[in-house]
Image (cartoon, rainbow, N blue to C red; front, side, top):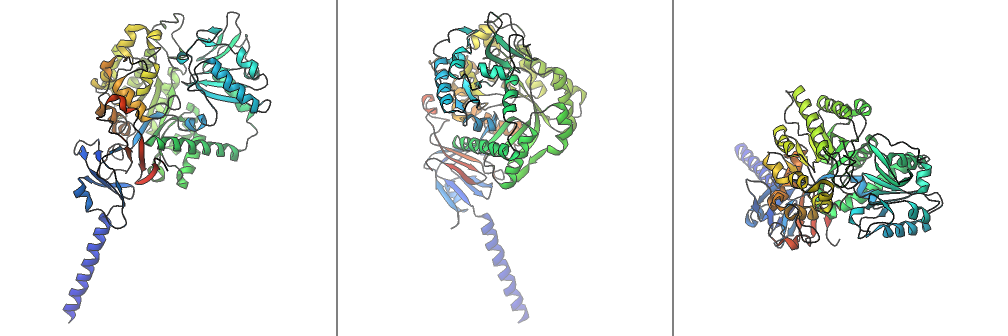
Length: 571
């Protein structure tokens, strides 16, 4: 009798165990009947994927994944659509995307007259003395040159005429120049006698008067005046503004299929806000953040700000950001030889080699990556030299994955150094086709062909090349950057040195697994592999096989982050 009871209890427990095991294997979400491109060489292609919680449970055929479907499983029929790892924005400015939606959008203005018209309209609605901000203009992309102009840039007079009592600061699309009206110049105390700051330039007319154009660090003169006007804002007001920017940025990223975002430079104060959002569960996009701060601030704060996978893998802070030069468009990129269209200039060095070298030491000491913005060939060479010296001084430090952000224009001698040193080329495909209209004028044909956006040459050196948009410099759309990466095609139908194009598989990897690797996150994201985070993007078309001309018409249908639908087209 006792033996029978024991057997019954054993069978009961075994039954409970079997039921529990079945429940543990059931999925919370299943996508089936699609083309699943995993970016995992072990199983590159599948029909369906099962998710449990925030992790991928299994990938396989429809029949294989059917066993994970329970009554509580959310099931989505992909109807043949493409599902890929969630896009990772490899270099952008997260809050900048949100901020750009709160100021004048000058990205698509056709000429200087269009800029004036927008400012005039904004001035009519503004209070006297209220600042008017905008971003996105690019003189090389206008349909006509402004008159009068200096080096192709307008002068401030027409702008000042429509906004005499309101200071105006309009940031160049690149972020590496700004344009101010007379009122803003007055508040910044910029006159014909003002000296150029180190690493910047106040553009002047033939009489030595400021035109309004401020290159690189010269923008800080006017930005300081703008900050002074906000001195009365409380911490609560400032935080509310940052939260709103984060909210707008996240909405935009999710609508473009982005699950993770590598933020190219935020202050400790901004990181504090990111941490609060992560604590609240209010970060819908995963952030990997580079710290932008002085060496003095880094010494004080690096040890306590290093975070990996904070807030359930929504916030990581493990990199330091510097900019050693400017951008090619405003002629701020630091070159080995003068600009072809401005022989008096080799661009601007915006941060000293000594400061960046000190940051390299701090990065090695505290276990951070070092990420340095370098666009010109001189800038890239100087950064490679800094990295190489640091690596030789700490030979025991391996697999550091330090990055050059942009790496756009390289001397042929420096291309192999990326692979040799293990330096990641953190590039933006869309910059190539966006800038191609003026690159030959700036560099001449020889330099352009040898070293401009040389993706294939870098990959053949053994370097990892990542992708992104540098938003809000460009639209944050991975589809647009993917298209640029595989076609290098301009609006007029011409191609920019097409031999450097990526294959479609290379371009997808540059936007997924390569970005994950560049952040030490390849074991967590970047491919649709069981055990990794369930970050998935579903597209309306198969960008790996459709004709080139259809790629740009592809839409994001779902963005899934951590196994939850964060964006659904039409909802």
